[in-house]
Length: 183
Image (cartoon, rainbow, N blue to C red; front, side):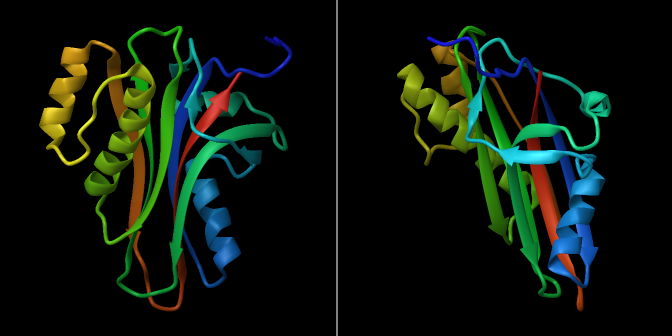
């Protein structure tokens, strides 16, 4: 196994919403609101690294403008008035910090922050449960699943970062949520 690759030790969660007549400018505004517009973002897949910890997003201030930064990011955009859009990143962390966890991206229309957030958490927990050998019933209630995780004693916590917004006439509305991977 090689030790030459970058393995993040911290992750911070951010979110933002942008509105503009141009779609790209709307996306840029959502990045600004999330505090990550000054970075060169590289999207990566959904692994929460071993021995990594969640930290407050004030840690982004340590990153220099133009710095290449890895993210797990969800984004959704609409130019329809009154259209509800949501973007969410779910987090599932195993009890044993030596094991890796999962991050999930969920993009939706018509879901509130809470609905999209719970869905994203469920996705991350389901992926983690699969590698831990824990049975996971995606059709069960949220409380039943939380109880199963507690009984299994393998998943320590789940969380999410979610941004939703309602589209406005004549403007693009972009929502994004991201897990920013830090050294």
